Image (cartoon, rainbow, N blue to C red; front, side):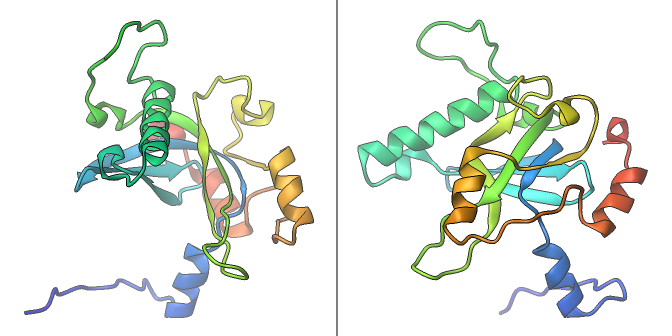
Length: 192
């Protein structure tokens, strides 16, 4: 017994769909959490970017880590996301604070996307959320242009410059790709 599926190509070719899906540029994006779900202890946060595209981010289950260091890193990343999404008050004190990850749905934030390290020498490099790349919309670390309302800004960081010098392909684009730019112009984040 198989698992049936349907792909709506919307009049595009499979190659066009694939190219569109992989066209994410490194940079800063206004975003909103549109869904949160859990599978085998791993949390998945589905972000809708300000230019209309979606990004799915995985927060690994710390209890499934094979070393204490990985367990600690996984928990730290979850803690960071919870705090920056406003699920944990900044003035919270003590040893534990309970909250519901589903309360993240609808929360606005800014995400930082950059090239990840390839899994193997010479392997493919993909644009992903950086390790701590989620910020409150008014965070002073977020580029001013984003805090003033832009939906995208180029990634200008020491890490991005270092990666470019190591042969990573980086974009010289100073605005979203053309298709995303026209979509961004029509997108009202208040409606998200």
